[in-house]
Image (cartoon, rainbow, N blue to C red; front, side, top):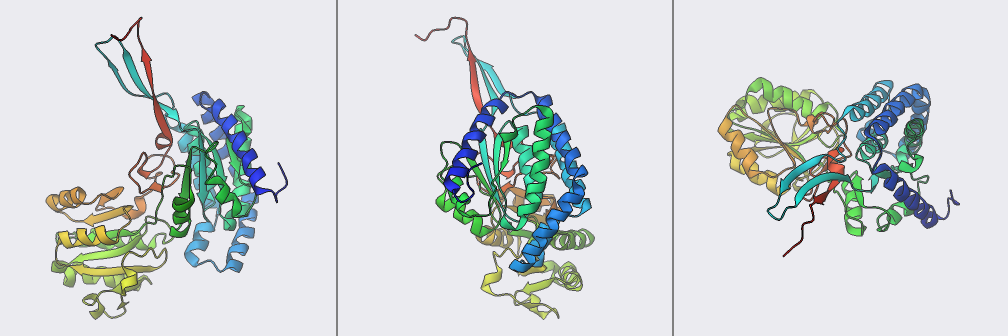
Length: 421
């Protein structure tokens, strides 16, 4: 590797090596990729003490930097979370290999037989903040889809990511796959990010995973195509036909289970007909759980709430805060979500099938839920093993981005001497 002060040279070298690895990975045997991921999982578990030690250095860096409690929670790696990383690697290993899968197949009157088959994207650049588990998730999913990946983790998770990355490389080595298939940018210097965004000759797509600032920067400056993972301004609408017990359990879980993830609920909308029953109960339960409720004028009557300002609508708190508002009907809830949501995940709590259908039909978020906690907005929970992020755009990939979403396709056309008249 070149001198760490020469960032453009470092990134050019990483890009060239990734491109060479991607060419080899495109036809790698599914068994070799699965073996690499299984071996990586074994290596992560064997190195758990080393990973926790590296994570402690990152936590100290985060504290010195003044990270919020929610961001510190994102950064933290416990033995249980490391086991989750191993489980994710094994789950991706066990999935069907998407490369070469036939999407469609047909014959033409001209004598042509046409297949549309899945093919790797090539080189994926992943830019992420804080959460060191993304190192494993992104590395695993890109490998499964036959892509080489360049990982640029956040400065906060620098040591944790390095420790996890070393295990992924160990897995590649064990299976005979190119070690350059999963590379980690070896510097905290932000210039490396700017370089990645313009590496059109070697990077095929950029996936930013982080806050609005990071994603905005990438979307503004990237010359490489981007899978946008925008903030999770997640809404839950309690309909007039909501089951009180389901509403209470779902809202509490969606807000408090882990506040720092993109599927955490950030705004609660309550139908006016259930304000004095379900609504009151849910708001009081949130307050009792330690959540700061930023309430509209109607809900301000509940002791313990605080007045919402215009800044609270459309805000991603990633903390023990939630905005709350009473709406006259389902269409008002839908209008509010359209105005303030981020097309990430939105939920309706109702026993009315027609209301649920209306909600699903009129909103275009990447994930829409009924009677389920929004904390399930996760590729692992969708059966994808893991995710590289939740794409909120509409082109190519949308929602949880798993291995299948990290492929493109090509057409295989065969004839028997066919010529065009």
